[in-house]
Amino acid sequence: MAGHRRALGRSRGGFTTKLHCLADALGRPIAFHLTGGEAADCKAYDALIDLPERAPNALLADKGYDADAIRTDPSRRKIRAVIPGRSNRRVKMEHDRMLYKQRNRIERMFGHLKINRAIATRYDQLAHSFLGMVHLATARYWLKFVHAA
Image (cartoon, rainbow, N blue to C red):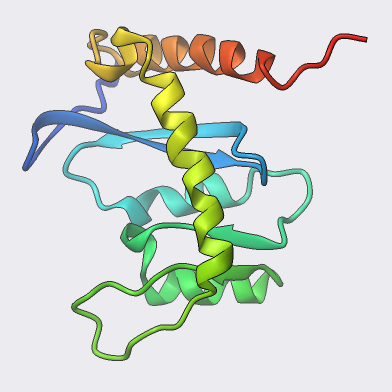
């Protein structure tokens, strides 16, 4: 059973999982990374940033990804980091508010995926079973972007 990872962990919300997503500019999911509920969001950055075939122009992320290492890495890769600063940060960080508003596409995508109750409530115990259901829901979500000729 050592090979069966659960990716479950305690957080303030209970025994949960965090689903991190790399998406394109239209909010279409490209890749997912699963962590336990207690894990910091910034832990998923390294797993997702190297995945796209071509580097994006901007990285839009929420306050959970506000870390000095994450702010410097995109600039080294010539990617614009649009990450609001955490409220407890000593030095306030500026970000492009107009560009950051486009991050709601990703939040809406998560809302569409959570229409599937198995994803919203995490029925599956094993990480690979849960990710399989996420991938099925993602394929269904991508279909709305396919235009018939």
